[in-house]
Length: 130
Image (cartoon, rainbow, N blue to C red; front, side, top):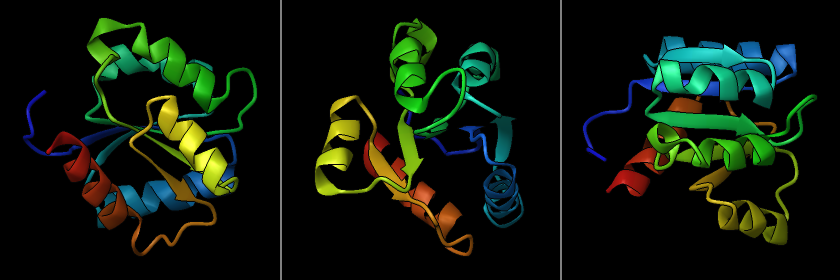
């Protein structure tokens, strides 16, 4: 994996308001290219063709949740090493540790601050890719 630059983010979130706020924060303030999906299944179907630098997954979504989507993506060679960050309101220490044990590089708590979201994601990504 090259530590070039973070430009493309695959983002799965089922809540329209949260999706819109995050999309604005990441595209307008962060300058990222986003592929927005409404659930884990859509993200899984779009991921390989989009070839993201980072995958941002909500934990609880209909049809396929974030942890299941992550597990399925890890079985696809092109996605096996793409860093993943979960976004969730469930951020107790043992929950966060569980998400990291699944392979996430970190967890962003909801509600998040749209003013610092892109900066937070950039920092986590840089830490992950070294």
